[in-house]
Length: 236
Image (spheres, rainbow, N blue to C red):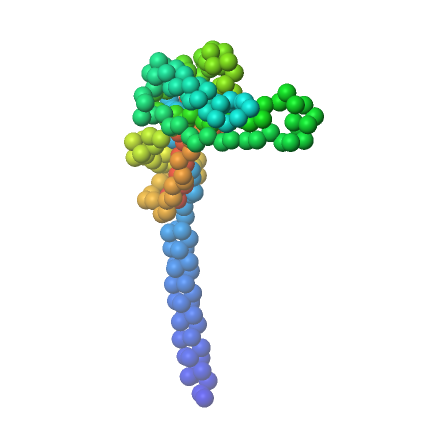
């Protein structure tokens, strides 16, 4: 190959590599520019009152034979039903559970013959949206225990909130706005501007007791919380 031709080829190759390098560099720069984004979280909280109350009232009678206990336990249940109705709880909100009959262990009777031979127990469940009625009934359960001569033994009460559906759209919008505010602050600090949403995801709605990271069934006040995670593009 002639020296002149070799020089010409070398020059052409050098120019080609230089041009190719320029375009590769521009491509990488554009990729980095396009890929600039910030990942932020937005929080929305709403304090609400519980809209559903549940209370389980346990009743119990003891005696020498089930046949003698059943009428007494039935009478106790009617007393409890009347008590609940007086507090404002409707009859269709009351559910009477099946009775459980337990026979006292023979060894226990041998050690103490005065023990009752049988115990019959049941549960009266209430599910209602009348929060005030359950609060009032729960406050007066000790009076009911006295009135039923101890046949009302224990009770379990809990309050919950089921109205997330009505709050969903407003709270998601508020959480997204909070995320954008965080992105705007980051962009301002870094000398950038907030662009379009690159990616977004929504966490589940949480029902919490005020000031806690979990729900408390005894708390009538609830906090509804949702968190959104958003990636925003950043531009110069």
